[in-house]
Length: 265
Image 1 (tube, rainbow, N blue to C red):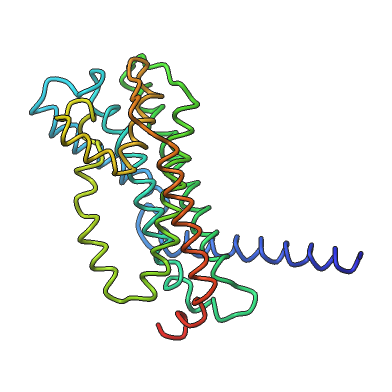
Image 2 (cartoon, rainbow, N blue to C red; image 1 turned 120 degrees about the vertical axis):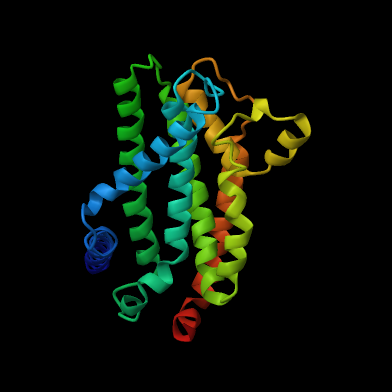
């Protein structure tokens, strides 16, 4: 019994060490070769929000909620980017870590977990810094309600995990899927309620966009930032259900075909 327990402990330690090594490798590969390094994780959303705020402030007097353009767009842009970046990075986990996956001590699960942890922690820091930075700099007076904000973050993480894991299989299995997926998801930035609220849309359009899980993420996030916004139409259960199904299917297919996929790429 003691031998079994020590073996499990050793295996767990080796797995944690492998995941940590993969996280460090990705940090160096992604940020270490560019000027500014890890700061780009913050500079990119700052630049995006600045451009959007300037552009829309010239066309509109005020955003759909509140009177601060950067805060309004941040509540849509930041959770969207968390989902998008996480799904994209997880989808390419096999190709990114392929040279290491032939070692017995490194598994496809290690690669997925490492990318999920690193990118999740990065976006959590970005959301924290950006939200509190905007509220403090512009003195917006918003009183944050943390349960909805945390729920929205969890929804974005879960959805990014589900789509990323499922796409990890599809991208490795079907070479054409990357182009197809790019075409399908190209309108997401426009139809995910980043620039507007669902309530501002005609009912027929709103009924169609309701099936986009990202609008639920954004709606719940704004519920936590704006005390007057309830977003009663938002359904976390809908988002979590999609996430669980996609994660389960992705893991099942990867467990069945991961060796074949590595050998064929």
